Length: 267
Figure 1 (cartoon, rainbow, N blue to C red):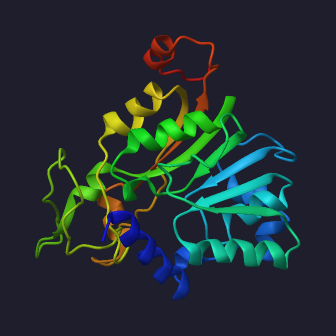
Figure 2 (figure 1 turned 120 degrees about the vertical axis):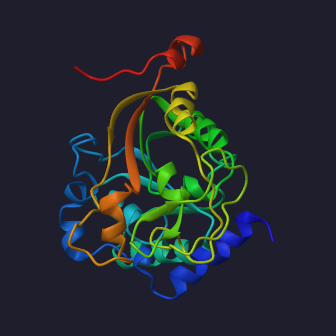
């Protein structure tokens, strides 16, 4: 079984079993959708009428919130069970959401420069070639378009377990190639899924080389020094699990070499 099919099966199972990763948007959240989606102030003040791609983001949450805010929403995911939740919730709320079953590294069914915003939750760890994902996002975003993404930190994916003193063990090489080996510590690993480690050079440098400028980067706080060993908050106190990035698609008329060489931070 290919890793794409394996991950499709894993996420179908998560959706069908009512996993926390398949939590649909609530009425309270839909009443103030941008406040829920944008705790960091990265989105424009209004997304009404904008074309938004929710990438690898099915499950009846992100797409429903954007549609509630007035955006024209397309959601792409490899899991038909997760996409079914988007269709069900959109129909229930009388919202229009387009769904497409596809892998994040092959958006060939989407036209070039057809979106104003691409919003992607943690998911790039499920594909081998991060550069291809970035290239596809760069292709479908309009000039000046916004790409908001969240990724697993490389160190988090290197952890394989804990010692008897509750120290976290890095047992996978930073330069590991191919699918990650099984780990006894599964605090931040989804059951049944195949994952891949992407280095910082690939996560940030690859983004710049794909035609983006980085505007902001944050690390969601997941730590709790009082949490019991084995709890994901305990591990999050020692090993940062995620990063979020806000990036902007440069104008296509800009020379690629110039665009790739700049890491721009707003004044």
